[in-house]
Image (cartoon, rainbow, N blue to C red):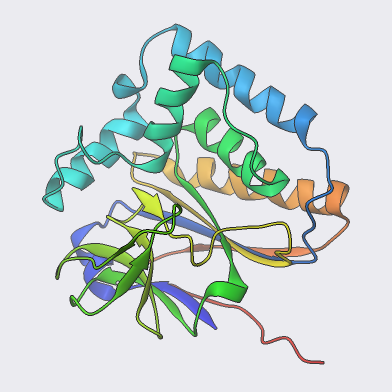
Length: 235
């Protein structure tokens, strides 16, 4: 299985920085509360100085959404939606320890983080424009079909695992209690994003090593090296 962005994505959004991490052996019984609390606290401190709409990381994604034809205050990147929720409610919901940690990192750095269950992905996964034949299953079980040209995470089986790029993930590959193998995708558009994305990958890798006791493998993707290969499990 390979993850990549299409050449058209890289040419249209040359400012994109993407980090990918793969891990096997994830379980739902790990306490990440102390780790998440630190990231959430840093995010709250930042929000106290001004709303998320002024963050350069969020402004960069708003520009990208406008370029895609998505009104940026109607369709927000996942990081902005989480920051809005944190500002309004003071906390984020608990879903799964790895997802919770990904969300905490997302609000700390104002960068979208997608945690995908590889068991729900059919073949290669590509961030590309929809052709109009793909199917999307929402987190609430609703079915939909992305319009041609909409940027989605598409697998080879015609499933859309994210709508409007990083606006909303799919229930098809949502992490659940029985999830064992994950692909984490971290995407940023702001100037100087590479060190931030690398730091986020390092934090996730350290947590997987120290809390879950499982190894992980990560990489930063570029237009010249856009693919990340996930080894096929045997046995």
